[in-house]
Every structure is written in C-alpha cells, then in structure tokens.
Length: 222
Length: 222
Image (cartoon, rainbow over all chains, first blue to last red; front, top):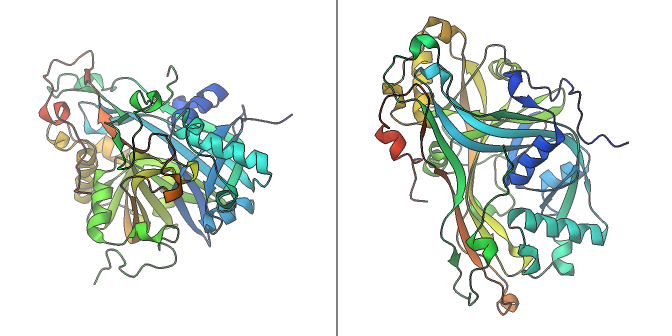
C-alpha cells in the first residue's frame, strides 16, 4: 500500500511549536495544496539551503514541477535529492492588544519527498495540462498544447510526497485578561490573494472568458 | 566596509534561468523585502532541506526573525548555519495563446546569510517593534510593548544578508508570431494580496484605526 500522507508524523514533519495548530489529515493538506498557487521548493547545494518559488500541480500524492532542462534545480530534483515544497496561504493579520500576542492567520503545508523526471510522453502532456489548470482551471481547453519542440524544452518533475503536515491558525487574537482594558483596536484584518481587472494583450480580439472574469482560487471550508 | 548586497553576484545568487529577469540592485531588493509579509526560510537538518513560512522585518542589511526559544529552527539559526530567506510577491497570471508561454508575473528575492541571537535588551525591543511595524505600519504605537516575561519568551534572530538577488517578471504574455491567430483570450490577470473588512474581537470597543481601514503593503514603483 502506498502511504499517501503519514498519519503518525515523523520527527521531520511533526508540528512542535503550537502543536495544536498541526494537522496530518489528507483532506486538510490537499485543500491547502489545491488552493495555493506558488510554492517554495527547498533544496540544498554544497551545504547552502535555498528556497525557490515554483508553480506546481497536485495529482494525488504527486506534485508536478516544471522548468528548463538546463535548470540546476530540476536536474538536482530528478537525481533524487531530498526536497521540501512548502505552500503558505496568508489569511489575515491578527492584531492583539499586546505586541506579543500579534499573529497571522495562515494555512501552510510542508511536504517532503523526492522527484523523478517524467519521460513518458502521455504522462508528460497530462502533467503539463494539469499545471496549466492548477493556475487557471479550464485554461488548457483554450490554449494551444505543447508541440514536440516545447515538450523537449520542458523538464517535468513528479515529486512523490512521502510525508506532509499542515499548520493552521485561524480566529481572533487571544489577549491575556489583564490586557483587555487596553484601548487599542483588536481583531483580524482578513487578507486574500485577489484578482484585479484583466488586461488583454495588444493582439487580443477575444472576449474575457468566465474563468478569468470570475477567477478565484478553489476554497475549502477552512 | 560592509558589503550590503554583492553587485557582482556569486554562483550562489546569480540568476541563471531567464537571466534578463535578474537584478542585484539594492533598491529593487529592498523594495521587494519591504512589501513582502511572509518569507520562506530555508535550512537543512541532517541532509533534509525545509522551507518554513516566517514573518520578518528588514533593518538595513539585517533581517529580523522571531520565535520561541524552544524552536529548533531558531536554535539552528543562531548557531550560524547557512540560511536563505526567500520573499515572493505574486503580481499576476500571464495567459498566452500557447500553454508553453503561460507564466506568472512576480517579484522575488533570495537572500543568503547567517543569523545571530539578539541579546541586548534595547536592540531586542527595537527589533520586536520593527517586526510589528513591518506587518502593520504604525501598530507598535497602539499595542502594549513586551514585558520581561514576554521578552524572555521570544528569541529574536538577526540574519545578516551576505548576498541577495531579485528576480522580476512583468508585462504581457510573449506569444510566438505563428500563434497570434489562435482565438484564445490572452493577457494578464493582476493579482495582489488584498485586505477584506476588519473584524473586531468580542472585547473591542475602539474604532478602526486608519492603519487598518486603509491597510496596504508599501508599494514600490515596480
């Protein structure tokens, strides 16, 4: 049986600080990954760690990453080095009466795993399609799919998630009782990645499709 | 003389893929760091890299990070292990006529350095104040500052940036001429982290301050 996400977290993914915010539930983890747009891929080269922003798509327990065949990062990723993809959604600013109790409402996932190159043509085309649709659901039906030159010019990596954890903070500030008389405003300022007005390019004669006019990230109930 | 940011980038921070998007200018790098809210700190433990979302504040060429004294991450950070803090602003979705030319408009900074614990009381108080004001400019004037117990319960780390690079993509999609006849909509859908309606907590009697009612991240001209 494939372990999708470890229900008994290892020392590597167990949430230690504010452990009450930790979750190892598949549904929670997948909802955050599916809502996210840009993840940060951590890897180390010669003892120096890096975090690099990356688009990704999720297919079951695999995360698809893409880039140039000349990318050191992706070459490393397909050599099986340990990877970590972290996705963070910033949901709000939490303003308490004391500076100490200030916080941020967020949902994040830390996913560990290793990558392999996708070499099968059909699997690669499907992964590329899913990547486009992770960013803009429905877009792959309108855009021209990759030709042979473009296929060759793209490395697709499938990172199998071996373990993952989520961390979630939500709700109002939690001030100590002794601070409740402080006259400062206290509460939450919600934040979300919001679309503006779409800007057609200079050659565009088409009307704005629904998936742009009504664009939003898929939201879970959280 | 202190090198703030290396003008001649090393192999560690030189932008290789899409090098035309790379920048090593101090002003560009600092504007991105100052607009950002949550960074991702990369570090490695026993060969496994991690990226963890972190609040931060910038003071010149130092980045302030905070957390619990029990945090493995921060204990490592003050032991001088190599760190990387990456900040990414997602500015828009770039929809081309071909799937291959789809992209994202973004501004990111990769900052490398090493950390030290801030032990001086005045420096620590100032770093904590700056952290609050990085998140909500002006907030430190209204919130109660840390007392001795809270000071002890917080580790403040100053990460000195030894080198950094920025990477910026902006503007419309760039389709090949042969694709301009494809009838798909093409252009940019701007994205930004936008505030919603502030939610006071159940004990709050104060009116909403201007820094919440008109909240926005400091924007550079970029």
